Image (cartoon, rainbow, N blue to C red; front, side):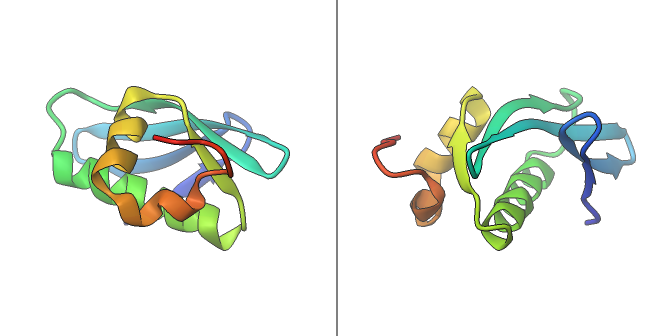
Length: 93
């Protein structure tokens, strides 16, 4: 999976057979705010989870803390506790 960081639109993107899937973000004070998940409704859920996992890996490589603000990201963090270290101090999900 090839992820493109479109800094102009502030979103991570992947191309799928059914179209573009994107995660919109904002960066403030070394924190990556995941604000919106844009995808077609008939997409494969496993593809979405893999995409989110790789975006979190990018954040970890860039030494950014992650603040999930969209319900899809919050539920991902609740189900995958191993990514709890990416949350900023004091943020409990």
